[in-house]
Image (cartoon, rainbow, N blue to C red; front, side):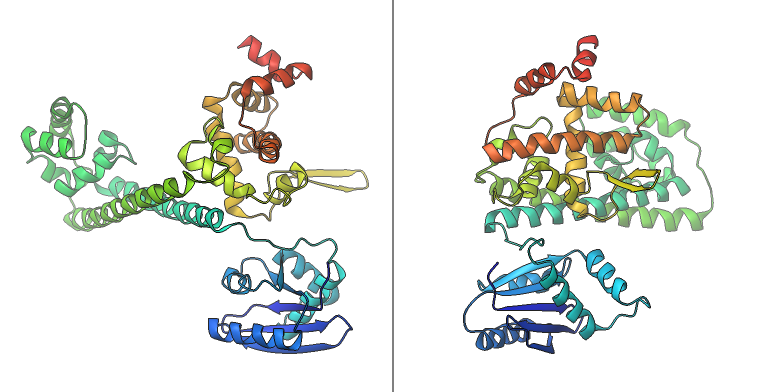
Amino acid sequence: MEWVACVGIDWGDKQHACMIQAREGTRQSGVFGNSPEEVHKWVLGLRERFPSGAIVVGVEQGQWSLIYALMAYAFVILVPLNPRASKAYRESLRLSGASDDPADAALICDFVLKHLDELRAWRPDDVRTRKIRLLCEQRRSLVDQRTALTHALAAALKEYFPQALQWFGETSPHLRMFLTHWPTLEQARLASIRDITSALKESGRRKASAAAQELIEKICVSVPLTDDTAIIETHSMYALALGTLIDSLDQQIAKYDKTIAAAWAHHPDREVFGSLPGAGPVMAPRLAVAFGLDRSRFDEARELQQYSGIAPVTEKSGRHCWIHSRWGFPKFLHQTFHEFAAASMPHCEWANAFYHAQRDRGAGHHQAIRSLAFRWIRILFRLWKTGQQYDEAIYLDALKRKHSPIVNRLAAA
């Protein structure tokens, strides 16, 4: 990699410390503010000092606001570092574990210089792929918030009105609709079958009349959990508030789904990842952006298996050997492969057979899913490199040629 200067940056909430080392070895430390104007001014000053050639900048992963600002400059070669790697390097030189921003920036600069041939420069994907990735990550964040609120709603109902959960289930939108009209059992007892039928039709319930009749019968025989008005009034108010928040999140998630679908419709790899069993409109875009459009980003499937945290870690010392899951990995990327593997099982015979074979060998549920994801990544990598669509018949033929035990399990099913 040809470069004229190497910069190590230690990120700060209000200002960033930096160490600049020229190719000939001269060094200069400094600080600059974190506002866009101050970052821009600092980069321009860097360009004035080194008017030609590439400038390597090492910064810890996760500081995306700074990375987003620096990626706008073509002469900057970004080298994101795993925070654990920079921490381990610092602790190897400072046994006390002391941390100081200017000194940490110098260590980051040293680390990048010593391992420049081994570190991978960060090349951002095209705008469309980055947009889909960010949309998918943000959508997942909203889904997680909805899940947390749904659990909180269920917990609140268990305190004063558990029958509502039995009638509708924890995640049903009909439950939230019912609570907006009748948030307590006492109020539900005053409802007529006509009122309940109308409410169920409003929420899109099929066969609303029969469902309303069945619900009226259940309400008539229900016994309140508690008669304490303090508990009923406060918990019902809380349940209504949670239901409103969940409904709002549902609306926003639907907007994200629509925006993702519009962007995904024109993605070059749409046919490749859309052909995967169980991928669907949610997982297919996530898988595509996990790989990106730059076919040179990964040379082997093993690189992505390790980077995503799907591949296990083997530690050996003397006679001791310990194999365990990885502890440091990009969370969303890890979730993408893990969740796709689980989603593929109902739609893919060999994936379902592989999962149950792992369980029969004593693996836990998530361990078996990770093993399946490990195998899927090899398949996905090949499709990504060649641009071919997934064909299960081809993969099953390969399993037969290799005399895989999965084939015998499929034959016995």
